[in-house]
Each structure stands twice: as structure tokens, then as C-alpha cells.
Image 1 (spheres, rainbow, N blue to C red):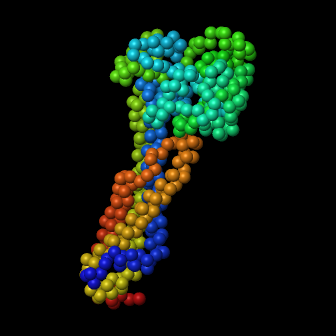
Image 2: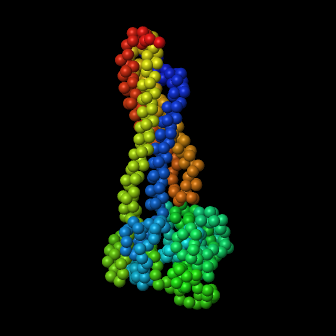
Image 3: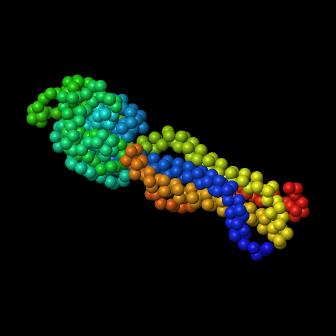
Length: 419
């Protein structure tokens, strides 16, 4: 018996109780799926936020909290506390060391999709996912006052194509009760999917925002022929915020301080990376709680292995006694139970990891296009191998107690058990 391969014996023992083993493996599979799924989506959400905007040294808006400025100017969540004057924007844009600026004007929408008033520089300087540039899936950038560019998700969900005329409404409601219907816009371009809030946005010329509000902030707009509008000075009086690119990123702190102490009006400049760090510090508690819940589910799966072994011990006392009678030493019985637990956990962990990657590979395109959530590279890595190893090792350790009990059972106790 000393030479009997324990692994082969453990496999045969599991096969003999296949119903219990399958249920236990399924429990571990589901727990590992949940844990890895939560981790992948959690890291994907963080990566998506961090990759929403790149190549921007500063974001400038009215004075508020850095997180709020970041949320409404980049992620299109919430609203600005105030606008900033065009004169202040020009002062910063002409400051030494400033390479480029892109102004944006917010506050309007179309059927619940955010409308961004901006310049052609937006398509030139905006970067996401590192250094990826915006590109057009169909059409081109706007070049006239009442031309619009629409994001990929908005175009798909609304069924819009180049040439479609749309009406912009005041505010951010799904239903526009105050529409600027005197000035319809024509879609001339559809952006390729980016996995950012731009996918659910509509971009128009900055001057167009002022034109549609000529009848007042909530007015219908200006029923003026386009030729006459082109001849007019349409320089806006106010904008919501603007992005700043510098000749050297080293100058960001100096310019940020100058903007934050600007005396003409209360402005605030934030460094995107710093604002994102503050954002994650706010949501960090919820993120850690979610990870803890997933870890507890894995622990539940491991305990199910321990429970299955403990509940079967009494039924297996005769089996252990027979093994002892055939020459198995106590350590062989101990090793057998530990090996069974490790094999069940390993099977469940591998199946859970494989199922997780399969599910994420199927759901990744939908998550990116519908929710702007870009998942990390969907290939197993050292982290996943570590999780499989930890689950397998933890199951083996938890099985020490029932294995010790089986180790302590005497040959006589096993052979004389009452049926």
C-alpha cells in the first residue's frame, strides 16, 4: 500500500462520490467566477476612467471641487457651478507655455444625449486610451454653424446617419420641453467607438451654442439666415470649461497656481491625474467593499469543500479501515483526504477562471459600446494563476482537520462501526 499512487486513489474516490463532488466543484466555480469577474470589471472601470482623456495637462472651469470639474467636463456627469468668460479663456490661452486650448460649452442635449459646443481643435487634440486619436466611422468633422458630429453609441441607439436633421433642447432631460427648434442641425459625421462618454455625445460648433440661445437661454433660437449668421461676429461671451495642452508638462503646476489665483474671476485648474486620484479615494471604500464581498464568496466555496469532507467522514470510516487493513499507513489516509480537497478546489478554480474569461470575451464588446467600459487584456495572467493556486492551497489547508480526524480513527473503530 505504501507504493499505491495517492493521486489515482483520490481520483477514484472522487468519482465514487461524483454527485457530491460535482456540486462542490460547481460551488467553487461560481465563487471564483464572481471573484474574478468583480476584479476584472473593477479594474476595467478604473482603467476606463483613467483612459477617458489623455494628453491634457490642465482642465479649467469655474471654481468648484476638482472632482466636480472633472466629472462634468470629461465624464459629462453633473453640471457646472458657473460659466467662465471668454476674456478669461483668452488670457489663459495666450499665456506663455500654452501650446493649445480647446473650449467646451455644455448645458444642452438631444433626447437625453449631451451636446458639446467646441471647436475643430477638439478632434485634433483630444486623446483617449493613451494616445489614441478620434477617428470618423462615417462622414467628417463639422465645418459650418449648424453641422453636428455624433458619437457611435448615440448614432446606433437613435438610428441616425449623416444627413439626419436634429433639434437641440435646453437642459439634460430625456424629453426636451424647451427646444431650440428655429435652428435644426445636420449630422455630418459619426465618430468611431471610443469607449468614452463621447460615444453618447453630440458635438457642434462653439458658435452654434450662442446662436441657438440668441432668443434667451431658454429661447427657440435665432431665425436668421445662415448666410447672415456667417457674416456676424459669433464669438461666445461665456464657455463652460476648456482643456489646456502645454509645451512642457513641467509648467503645469506653475500655470495651475496662476489660474487658481486669477483675480478677474474665480477660476480653477485641475490636473486630470490628480483629480482622478481624488475621485478613486472617494469611491475606494465601495470598491474595497465589493472586493471583500467577492472574497467572502470564495471563502464560502472553500467551506463547502470542508463541509462535504466532514459530512462524509462517518460514511467513509469503514473505507478508511479497509485501506489501513490493506497496508495504508495513517499518513496515507491523511494525504488522501487532503489530495481530494485540493483536486476539487483546483477543478472548480480552473473551471471558474475559464468560464469568467469566456463570459467576459462575449460581453466585452457590449460593455465597451453601451457603457464605455473597456476591460483589460482578456488573457490569463499571473494574477489568475495566483488565485487558482490560493484557492487550491486554502482548500488543502482547510482539509487538514477532517484529514486529522480520519488519521486518528483506529482500525478497530472502522471495522466495528455499526451499520
